[in-house]
Length: 114
Image 1 (cartoon, helix red, strand yellow):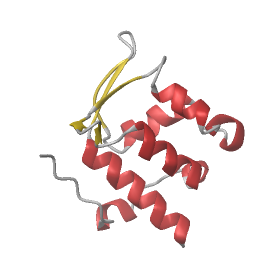
Image 2 (spheres, rainbow, N blue to C red):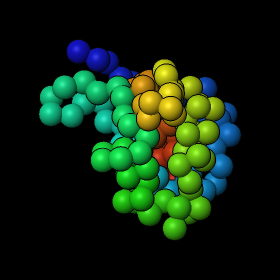
Image 3 (cartoon, rainbow, N blue to C red):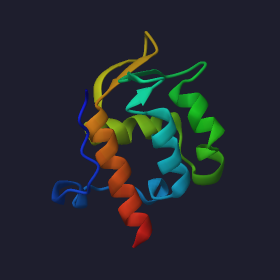
């Protein structure tokens, strides 16, 4: 069983996160796109494009239309925060680090509440 810490850390308080990502839509995007588990199975990968992909979820939450957040901006933020274990654009594959995704989500939620 995977243990993921869901509290804010001192390290994440110093993260530079562009303002366009500090919104509830992006938090919902993170929750749905990068779940710790799906159908009682641990999950740590996602396709970039296509059905159930990062791009499809970004479109569903209208991140580009409402906040100017593109797929490339999402991938850059995730990379900057250490959320990737592996990214292969040619093979349309992203393996992610559950703990860092959750740190990012918690930090954004804390900044929204301020």
